[in-house]
Image (cartoon, rainbow, N blue to C red):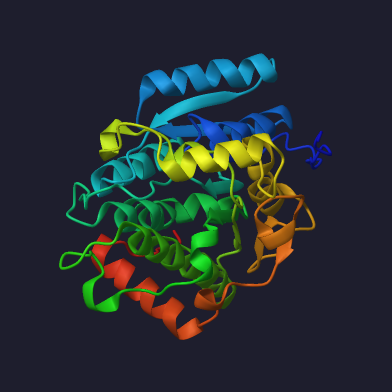
Length: 314
């Protein structure tokens, strides 16, 4: 059965600077392309320069005349995060849109970041936490909207406070869920603290539903030599138009959250179809694990300590 086309319209973003992590392929590349086509200057912080250059070629093919450039970033290294922060602050241009999209999912065996954190917690949450802290003066200067891409996996689960780094008993899916719960709590706490301290930025959350993105595809660097069984099933259902979204539709909630003038701070955007697995983007009920302000404050404080990041506004 043919799919009913799903899309959104972005406003004119001329004069805006947007930063999108994880934009060298998949959903992130689609987001960057749409932002560039709407007139934004788009920065792609990437780990792999070759993939980054290919992404720029793709964007310019879709949006001739796009203003897009690469910067170096490995979110699993706090040194790399700090270096990107230094680079962008030296450039001195305000940032108006930040989409924290990059992530890793379910390595078959526990892996660590360069700083010794469990890879999913360190990359998906702590790396982005430190990045926002480093960029805070530029975000303030741009009155930025920060959108953090979580996951439907944050709908249930909890923070494993007794073993945040899963040193004693690693479970890939639970560790992934924890990373996205922590990241979501951070995104909501960022909005609260901005309002309390007058930072002038807004923050909200998005999730892509379920679609055949590269998260569960073959990733040799994560110890996954071939596509996972889940990925193959997702790809089949998506191709047949059964419940799930596509890579093209999965990017829309984050774009709505980050660029739609009517998108609200402190809320969650995702697909509005059955089970929120696919369909048009819309505001959604906040997941239960993300509703505690006490838990959010605890995540913030622990993250500051672990990353040695202070949110200094100037």
